[in-house]
Length: 110
Image 1 (tube, rainbow, N blue to C red):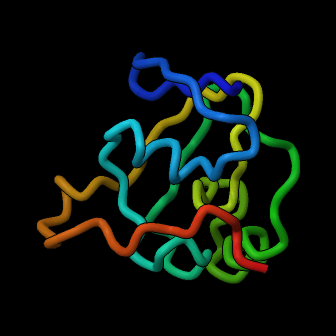
Image 2: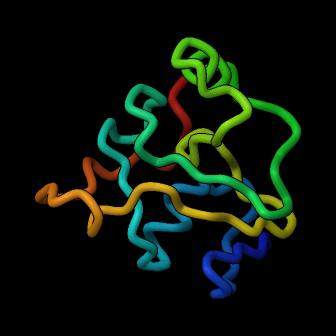
């Protein structure tokens, strides 16, 4: 089991679960406008600790093409592991949008 920390709140999630789904399942307010396909970058997070060293190829390509590589990560393309201390950068409450977006699938798209 992974330990996820957001704003001082700690919870566990199964290893290998998409980080975005762990956050949503825990009731954390986070956007996911494209449904977890690494297209919109609204599920962005930063890490205080526990950031994965590698990038999923789709996450890396999107961050590079938008000039955001090294600025934040996409929680839709990160799998839970170890202890991850995360900051959510975009919440539904801060946008005025009607919903956070379609729920991402359990698996990262190929």
